[in-house]
Image (cartoon, rainbow, N blue to C red; front, side, top):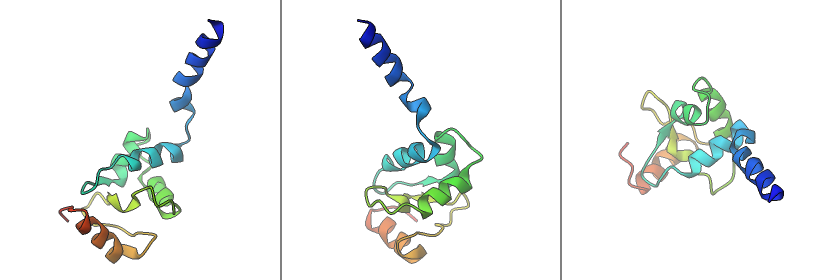
Length: 101
């Protein structure tokens, strides 16, 4: 019984202990095909609305193909860069998923 209480407390604190990077990557994983979020929206959802540039840095250094970095765009409506082929590749991926850009 005591062990279960400790486990429950531990698991409740799991999200609080996640790094900003882990939170960002988890959020970006949930963006559906054809959808997008801005860097600022991702930062806000991860707990720091002023860290849009930090989100960009995380996207720029992420090469995990299961993370759809191309679905994160700028607040001004432009696409921004993409670390696996530039803006042209990002546009092609988004269009291929049915995104309206």
